[in-house]
Image 1: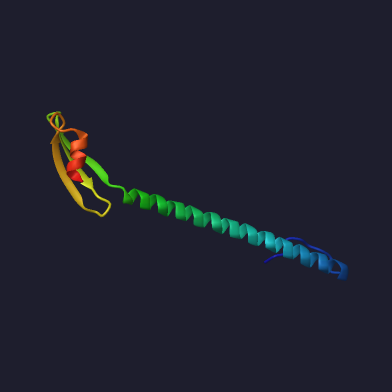
Image 2: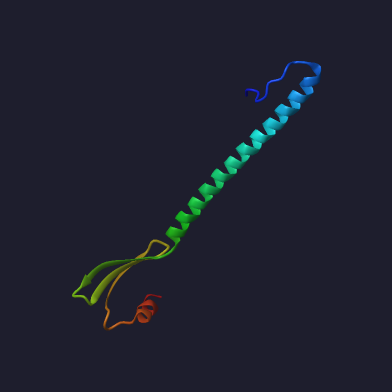
Length: 101
């Protein structure tokens, strides 16, 4: 590591240069540590976001036939899929949800 500060080499300045280098080294360590912390937090946030995406059930509308019959596919958080069709005029959303649960 190159010294950040340059001093003349005398007995009186050696103490100052050593302490200056120590404090510069500590500042450098703090900067490195905080940079590592930020990088770790960023990775953790990204992992959480991916986990949240994968945790929730997914519902895909596969097709709409004749304007009233809808075919959907539901993927659970455990990877199981259920495909179902319903007529929007005959079914209520609450009834569909109750039948799936």
